Amino acid sequence: MKRILLSILALTLPFLTFAQETQEKGLDQRIDEAFKPISDFFSNIIFFEVFSGAPFVIILLVLSALFFTIYFGFPNIRYFGKAINVVRGKYDDVEGHGIEGKAEVNIVEGDIKDTIRDESKEGEVSHFQALATAVSGTVGNGNIAGVALAIALGGPGATFWMIICGLLGMSTKFVECTLGVQYRDVGEDGTVYGGPMYYLNKGLKEKGFAWVGKIAAVLFAIFCIGGSFGGGNAAQSNQATIVLKEMLGLNSAGAGFWIGIVLAILVGIIIIGGIKRIASVTEKVVPFMAVMYVLACIYIIFSNFSFVDDAIGLIIREAFDPTAIGVGGLIGVLLVGFKRAAFSNEAGAGSASIAHSAVKTKYSASEGLVALLEAFIDTVLICTMTALVIIIFNSGGAFEYGGDGTGVVFIEGMPYEGAGITQMAFAEYIPYSDIFLTIAVVLFAVSTMISWSYYGLQSWKFLFGRGKTADLVYKFLFLTFVVIGAAASMNSIWAFSDAMIFAMVFPNMIGLYFLFPVVKKQLTRYFEAIKASQK
Image (cartoon, rainbow, N blue to C red; front, top):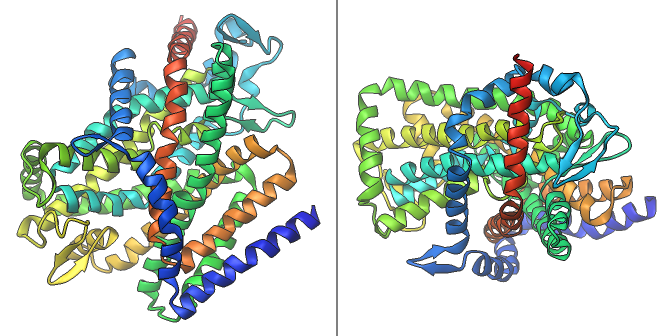
């Protein structure tokens, strides 16, 4: 093991040195040029357009979410209250004792498994911890920078389509997270292994398509690892470093490198402990982070309450008759909203099912219901509040919607994009908002990184085994990318990360379309257990 780790260290040190030289010698452009062909290649494949400039992957996500919403009878609305009750622990007795107090067995398509095992003892985290871990992976800088980008490009109308996509995405989350628990593996030590890799491999084998399932599972694992190193890691540490350097006034050449080292140590301490450590941190950090950010948004919104009805009216009107420069009409603004919402809540990508799979339950549908809340919190709640703050801020014409067509807008003659737009909006109403947003961005980034480390590690285990050596190799590589992301400017890697995360949609959707009838059976089973317990 020591030899392997020393070999990896020897291979990785040149990247760390190169990252530091990037700051010292100004080699950012070289990194961008090195990764640009790769990011362009994957982006062109993943985001290929079918009509009117609409990428097929976005159409697939939205239409699939609509199908699941209709098939399951609008679970995003009908089961919202029940989902909250599951998280509150109202049905814990049902989860612990089952119907008539007996241990339930896992029956899938007539194949009786684990007939002597009490599934309620399986799992590593509670419903709330699983939700907090999954939310921490989806709620990130996309909620601050991504929303601002959507409005800058598509105008207020993009908010409407983000909300619609978020509501539909709740149904997709329900399906994929139910399957994540249903087909998970549990090791001899009680460690849980779950996610699309497992329901693709095991579920499609049950359907008689074993080879399709194996290929799809491997592809998903590869894309998930790529997403964990990029969008779930390097991109996050990069944004955290930018706001920290700005607030602390650090302009030295190596500042980003050393901030990355500190972030890597912080993240490393957390992720070395596994999902239990991750869950114990996220269940505290995520609620605090979300509440802090939401309260700030509420303060701004209520401080400008007279503008709220105008903002809502503008959102609805601009959704169908956009005036933003270069947005491309109704289809353009719709695509902007859908793409940012899909990237933000990751519904359909399957990543969240990895975290939800670790829950302590014997009813897979119970965790599927919990997952409904994830897309709601991320997109319908947090993204919408961010959008309202920006739209209210711009009620006086601070910038022109559409900007230069790349997401950059000009406020008082200065260019702003992403988080910079949100920061200007907060600065208008909250004193010392630079400190506040710095804290928010760093917390968003760290929570996203630690959750994605778990997603990537599960995929890594699926490909390379579950030994301790394999774990340490992945975690070391992951922490290396924390430093690289902080030290370098990597626009092309951002594009690559987007492509990897959206690439996960293709293999994941294969599993969802083959296995959604299983979800229907498990939902019925869970509701029958609840009814029996109430007699």
